[in-house]
Image (cartoon, rainbow, N blue to C red; front, side, top):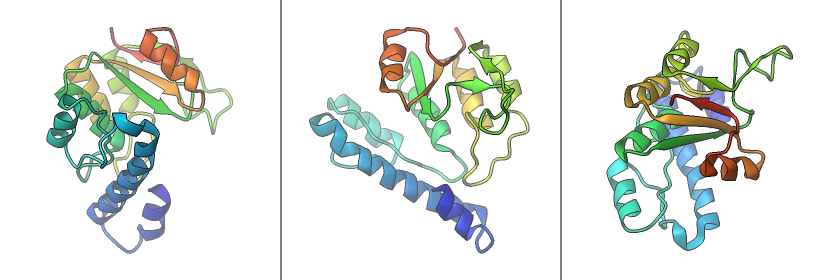
Length: 177
């Protein structure tokens, strides 16, 4: 999605770029469905009501982007809030939240646990444009904070991390409770 957005940025407006990102994330989501086999519906849910219906029918709903101006992180937080989830697990390509980008700064400090207020503070000043890349953008942070939803940020490069997070074991960064 970011590569498509980057290649088009100088030619179109942000809303168009958001739609390009939405379509790319939905394609990525479709690629995930076969791995869930019979546990997943046959298509990506276009919105939360559809995803909720799939869940109530015993399927694992699969979502990509839903609305312009919303990152997929914000979509996951909104859907978790909509479903009254007790835990949101955000899988990313770093070990959790750091005080600065660990890919750019070797002295970045890992943050094991943070409050909702600390999450809101660290997300301030983040640019919200199509294709932005930050661990949790401000909209996502606000949704997590308003719902007081325990959230874990884990590295998805190690499948064991997801199992640990689901079991309640300490892994990545924990936000809240």
